[in-house]
Structures are given as structure tokens and as C-alpha cells.
Length: 85
Length: 242
Image (tube, rainbow over all chains, first blue to last red; front, side):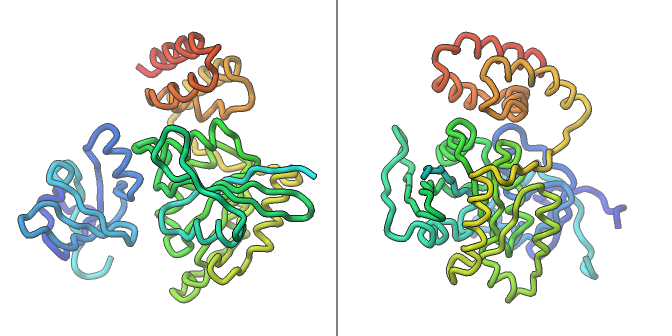
């Protein structure tokens, strides 16, 4: 399970679930993301992308949060396998 | 007969304002926080012969001042020191809500945790052992449904207990890494010497280590006379941090 390679949120497709491993965003925005539930260990789901591909909506802590490209490429995790948690 | 000040704080959409209305009824008025375009709702109620002045703070996910709302809420808890801070949590989303709860418990020990929307949680099959939670957090925990006026009596009783210091909560403290804890220990007595015991010294020390300018500015506004000392303290704090 933990052998999956780390990918950024840019590489996750709609419908996939990702277990977060590291948040490389700095400063106030980092704090904000942590407050919203983007913390290492959390499992988030890719809900959908906007028509032009940016931003992308995620389900985190039962809430929908949209992230811009700048944030997505700095958040890393492993993609959860389809079967089970 | 005395008057106590009670602050309500919570994430957006936790039913905080429903609770505010349930507590104060029509005895409320709204305005703005001085110099800020943030609504300030204030009301009062009476319980056992005492008056409780209730402030409904803006709903926030955090108190690290990313926005004016958060700054207003933080300054009120840290600098105005209400007699009781009621932390309103959405019982159906405890994980998300606990972040704010722990932040508030770092700022004040005079708190009551209030689990709202407990009827909704029940429908979702969520069961909360509030006794265990109260033991772990070190503050009273009350389950309510503000909408159905359920649990309000128990909440009023716990607010009274904390206001009258019949209960002196000992909130759980977040422990940081060894290095940060060491720096807090260096800084905390210094902070206490400068601003006295009325303010949460540990929390302010942490903010200094984090290089948080906004709390320093807020402190300077409050303690005008000590401004230069505060500046010194900041310099110390920052040199510790880097």
C-alpha cells in the first residue's frame, strides 16, 4: 500500500482518491490549506475540473474545495487503489 | 448580580447564529466592529439572576488571521478576554471542526465546547461520547441542537460554571517539537513580564516564534505605553526563531 510513488495533485484523475503525503506550499496559503484539511495522511477525492481545466474541485473533510494549479502542483500524495480504503 | 461576557466561536455553518438567537431571543443588536466591515452581533440573556452578554464572533476555520474576520475573532478572545468562550462545533464534521477548537483552547482555558447539530449527527449514525471528549480536551462538553432548543439548559449551566469559576478547565495543550518547546520556555516568562498574566503568554510566545506581525500590532494598539518594550520583545522573539 505504502509502496505507491508520490505524485502531485496534477497527476490525479477525476474520481481518484489520494492520500496526502506532503504540502509544499509556503506561507499564509500553507496555513490556510492545513486549516481546510489538506494535511498529511488525509484522503481527498478529485471531484471535477472546471471547463478550462483550472481550478479543480476536491472533497476534503466532507467539504468541496477548489484549488488552482499553483497549489495543486505543490501538493503530493499517493493514489489510493480502487479496492478498499 | 453580575454581568458576564460570553463569546461564541465556530466554523461557518455550524449553527452558531441559531444558537445565538436561541440564547438571546430578541434581546440583541447588531453593528460593526470598530473600523472594520465585519458584522458584530451582541445580545444578552439572564440565568440564575445574572446577566450574560453574548457576542457572536464571525465564523472562521482558523484563527491565524488570514482575513479580517479571523483577526476580529482572535483579538476578541486573546485581548478582550471574555469570561467564557463557547466553541460551537458541527457534530457531523468533528474532524474539520476540531482544528479551530484546539486553536481556541491554546488561547483561553475558560471555554465550553458545544456540539451542535447533534440531531443531524444522530441521523447519520454518528455517536459522540461527550464524557470521554471532555476528559481528553479538559473542558466541559455539551451536546445540543440549537434548532430544536435541545440541550440548551445544560449549556447554560456549564457556561455559568465556568463564568463563576466553579469549574476551572485545564485544556489539553498541543505539544510541539523539542526545539520549539525549548524556545517557548525561553520566551514565555519574558512575555509574561511585559504584558502580565491577563494574556495567554504561551500562545503569544508561539505567535512570536512564528513571526506573526498582526498579533504584535494588535498588542501594541492595546498596550500603547509599552509599545517600545513590545518591539524589543518581538526582536527577541524573532532572533530566537531564526
